[in-house]
Length: 130
Image 1 (cartoon, rainbow, N blue to C red):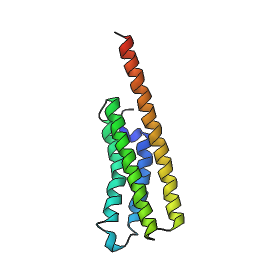
Image 2 (cartoon, helix red, strand yellow; image 1 turned 60 degrees about the vertical axis):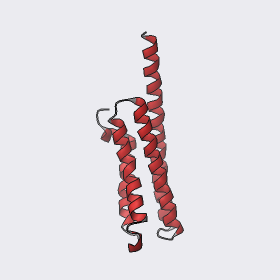
Image 3 (tube, one colour; image 1 turned 180 degrees about the vertical axis):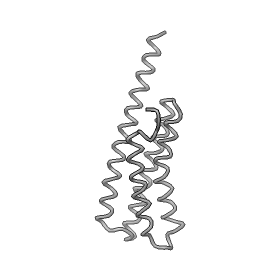
Image 4 (cartoon, rainbow, N blue to C red; image 1 turned 90 degrees about the horizontal axis):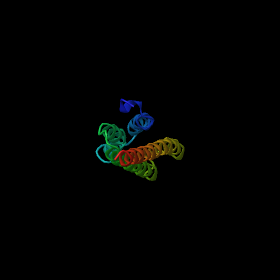
């Protein structure tokens, strides 16, 4: 792929990030610089890391950035649990967001696995060409 915007992991992360952006508008004012800021940062970090990894052109670096994206995705989930615990979100809204989260994490894990296989093929070809 020539551009990170073609990656399904990035596309799903973007959808999730935009859904989060809509959700945070409903948070109380006292969470403006606490939960709201944190959840925006972590959800943005998902797609940021996928994009940066794609730009590295080296399998291991790309994998590392995708792992960071997965960490940010999981951090976002924790922020949503906090929102649920503080009753800033109801269970149905939370479940809808968790459904999106699960889709993102599965696609991202699949991409990480793909990169690992491609890295192995590359290394095997390198060994065989010597």
